[in-house]
Length: 271
Length: 249
Image (cartoon, rainbow over the protein chains, first blue to last red):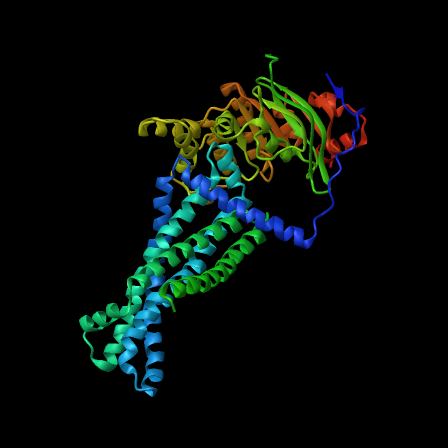
């Protein structure tokens, strides 16, 4: 039977006025904090997505190897080539190997790896999750009884936090090879003596500092990419913006973290 | 026909900023009944079914599905509830990075424990058989046509044998022949799975073919609810405009 419900018009509930710019900034910061907090909560609570984490480690790590290798190798060559003339001007070319070691292990290795990964992995995560958001794949995952945050976000952030440090040490190694190629072309130094000088110049603190920095860099790349992708606006334009914002924001944060790490490590060294 | 109410919606309200989409929606859907929700684009039809599965929170009102108040469900309870409700998305929402087999396996392996490989394969093949697309099992979603994607999307929800099916614009963007196939599939799902369905559409052929009842969403409320003929016998200009656009123009 036909039912006519026309007779009961009720006024819609009143909505509060639109928040101002400063309020919106605080709302956004609170939103980011909630996102990060949720990551830690979901990462610690079962069930754990081991299969997806391993798959993401493969995606982040193995598929970045060629780019990281090339960039690291060139960084080693260029840095060595550019440093030599300045040192020889002061008659200090004997410090070249130590300078290379310290610069690559302390700063260039972690920074180059993080920036390359922010460009390749961060944009990829932002675009993938943004695209999934736009095409309702995240909603589909949710209604099929799977927690998309745990499956998509936690696995990716853990994968970047775990894989970027490994890639960093790989970059350091490849950059040192590049540096050696350049050194060897000028000085005829053997690989063994070059490496002895390199390892003589770096300390455990340098290595641990690089390790911890790269864990933070990896976490930043993962969480920023996921946040931007998860919160992308609807439409294909939103996907592009999410990918772009993931790269720009994570690169900016990586430099801020590098600056903070520099202060902390400096304090630890007592310098 | 069974008359047990499985979906009860009372005075449901939802706004986005200053846009008041749902302004006091009331609807009851009985077991094994197909209810078609008709309305113009942007009137809140999809919002309504997203509230039914807990993807969106209502501003006010009462929503009960299968005897459970959806807004109160959280965590594991919400996940278990969602396994009983199939949701066919407007754009199918197939996972791009997975093959059709993996798409269909996904809800099954993540929700049903202790399944053997043979059990999973059997369930996937059965679901694909139901939608007549067994040959696509190893293809990627990007290799399928729009109609095929819709049917695979429905197959993915059927694999968990849901008690309720929610279809969001099942025939949107499809050619007339494929629309007929989809309409037939919706009716087959009702008969074979004894499922209760809400079908969101603005396609009156789909509404007439699949709906036991039609609910017309106008100005954020169900202004007309009844059989297809009852609703469109109404002289309300907005209802007649809708009818004429589909069948006269």
